[in-house]
Image (cartoon, rainbow, N blue to C red):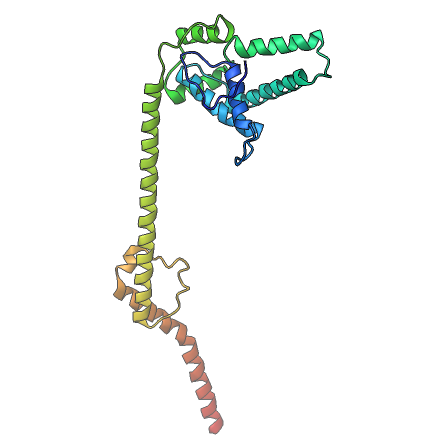
Length: 259
């Protein structure tokens, strides 16, 4: 009834819980030379697989977090029941047998029910994937998860979904490329302005490069090097004026003393 499944099987019906348990058994099985996979991590992997399968069939599931939690809980229930069954000393009461039968029935007779009950969340998924659930999709879900489990998915949204996903990915890559180009151009302009600024300072004989912390002057200033040179000279003259006045005062005092 429950056996390891090395791959998720995509078919015309929604998958059963038995297949989900089989995927968990395969992923969590301890094997030589392979890192042990936790129940939580394995449930996340299986969640992505079944989540995509449901959306591909245009039946919108619950959030991935809720789906992964349900998968892990059902798997751990399975492990507990199996361990109890294999333990000879464990007493299999009628209540235990009923619980085991109900679990097996839930895992094998119908699809593993992941349907979201949140209307707003469903609307958000329909907006993201560009396709709304139809009455036929609803009938397919009811049959697979709560009915005779005979209905098959006659059409998928994979083509439209894939096309939309590719468009979004292409648009995202284009935007990322533009952002990188803008960043590169900004950095190049900054370096160019820094070099022009340093050259201007060297020509003026001024070495104080801390006046502009980012070493990036507006292009109108960088383009007018003579004006910048004159500006630096004027500032140097202004800074030296107090020192010259002080020297004149000292010389006047000395002259008076000598008289």
